[in-house]
Length: 205
Length: 299
Image (cartoon, rainbow over all chains, first blue to last red; front, side):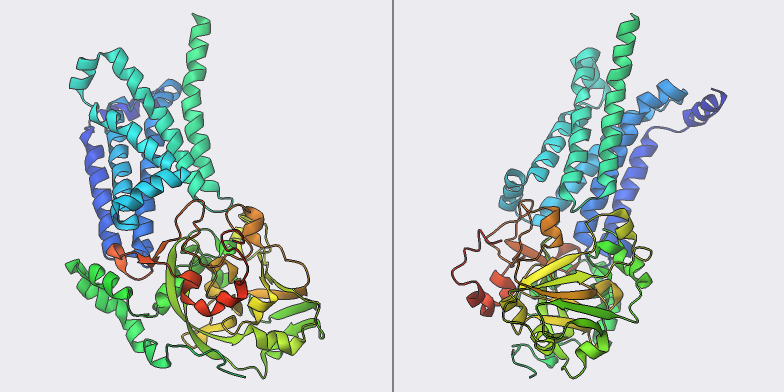
């Protein structure tokens, strides 16, 4: 617990908006590297950029879902960063979608065709649509207007959205690949852990 | 025996080595303006300009060396390609284990500038150096009972990280119908841009079937078998719904998970335009091979 308190103490001095700054810098940095075809962007920058934005979105969703269990199990409290993590994840999903639509498939009719015909795109799109109301209501005014209970209930959409994001990744790769399977297991585990502790609490009461 | 297939492209169409080595530097100088990608995309639709050696050797699918596009370039140096022998067996007059040089001796290496279309909907243009597969098959003597040719990729588990991870059921295997194998467009490539073929591109010898999706063009071949049965093929085994035996490039038949109607030519940068995919990847001369076949069924 002493370690957790030291970490919490150090984090108290870090403002939550740091997450947005770091996120924006990372997004611009990757775009700049893709534009100039540096490093992994050497040969086929479009696909690589699409994937980079998608993957960081998944990572941020995992981090966001870890905040509560981390506090419950270790006492490390990242709750004040959670909104910024979630909103940044949304912006990367948006960037991922824009690269897909504008740079990759390049026309509205083809975007529609992909969404309708390809299940892995459909699943990714549903996840994206679920995140939109969450991003829009990620502010104190919305919490007040909706009421905390209703707001919290709606923001549970994070769980299916994150799971669908991982399914989207698993579905698009060829052959047996470990990475998307790990994302799916971790996200499903993080979501499940909430219901397991919830039920345990209920039993105790 | 050479040049039975005449290319509409000539050696003059191949970018000189000095130019393709320098292109990156030229791009690096102008790309900051942000306009070069758009210009490059538009011109790529018309002229068949070969990709640079750098592009061809650093963006590969060779799952024995990892699933990332840059993994083969990073890991394939571990492949041991010398000595190299190829087992030729099945319905042939002269079966045996051939040293690569013995198998190819007396056969002529030709320059073939081919479009290369990946099933993932990207494409390149590659100046291969290779030998017509028909020449090799005639040399070993195909028996009249043979109807198919099966190929197998080398497995060096200690040198191939993807083999350890079992991404596919290795060894990678592929196959062609005998008439496809004997078609003058079908070559066994040993070089690119007059250099020995890089490991990540399938050293020391690989198949190139330009009217089929790239995964049919099996790399680093150690076995050729003549058979009267349709041979199993790796991607078909992994996912029969998505990958058929024929896998001809066909813009009218979509892959279940992505459209095959268009493709992106590698090398256009971040703003590269898509272009329409051509039937048989722009090699209509192979159409007679499939007369009477419904290509929406025989995928």
